[in-house]
Image (cartoon, rainbow, N blue to C red; front, side):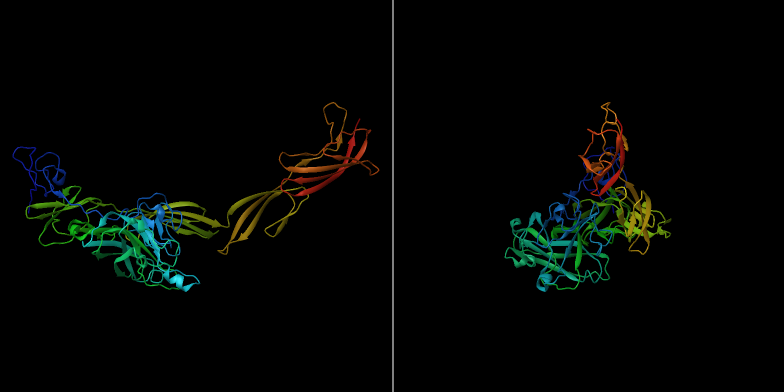
Length: 511
């Protein structure tokens, strides 16, 4: 069945643009919805929640408890929920989020209870994220809150009641300030529970899409999202993830495009709520898709901008665009193996330390680019340089060293293999002459030690005659009042490392 929405003009006399056949009927190089001849009222179905997929950032998170990095979101409770983004911090390694994420590279993580020694505090430790709505929810109006929740495994992420709370003013966000055991928002008179939904993740490592239908009895200006109000004692961490939040009045849902299954899967497709009184037509980049005239697409047609029109009698409405992009995921791994072992990375068997990159298929067949930092323990993993005073002995890794040189030292690793350190040992350099001639010719007029630059902190020198009498103490002897003879010196030197040494010997004074 062909539809002409509104005919305004024709580029070729007598020809009319038919707006749902994928053909440039009026030969103006514009097809279907791209042609100004085809006018259909644009439906508005924007979510009331700002930054609904945690993609907009004020900073890239570097650790947990950094929800402040997600634009327009706030820590609603004193216990702090987490902002995870692939630009930086990708979650706690002990309970990693399921991948790929439902929408983009950012998600929210939160706990329900915690493990410590104070049971009452543990059970009431509940983390909530909050936001001021872009526009308030109106009293006595039906809304739908749709979201994806991620489960790690049945131990970390058991079934729970996801709960949405609301308040009549953004001034009440956050709540329970400074009280870690405050519990849920509705423990404050300023907050009410809007609705909840029980959700289970089965075997875990998965995302579940669900929704809560709400009819508030007052205008709601801010929300808080997290677990229900029941205390949750547990012997282990309880943790979940949230993404792709959508809050809209139900009357606008008939033209809201949603995805079915993960965008990486081959059976990915789109749909709008079905109504037998409507006629549908799907478009890709503004061009009608032949045969796609139901509320659900029969198949995926690749990446691009999708829209659907709904015809009801003489009225025509067109949905906002749904931008379908097959996601690309990035992951960084660090791994250590023993020397002589290998690690299979894609088509490679790696045996040397270094950085490697390859592309793999994710759980749902999207490309996942993995960067691997491989360390082979047993290769020289570090070089250490040390300086000692002449004659000094140092202890390093259970061994004693006195002479200059390079020493390979094996240290055991947690993998049971040895890691090699290269110790480069240098002696401080100091030259002590054995002859000097104090005749004021500007050459060899003083006797003193000559160290290498920046190696000696201080020294003290004593000069004795052949009968053992101390005739000079200081830092430079000019031989005053002494004739040609042989003398004995004792020099105590403190090096910049803190080590000290005593040098002694004989010198000849020549007149």
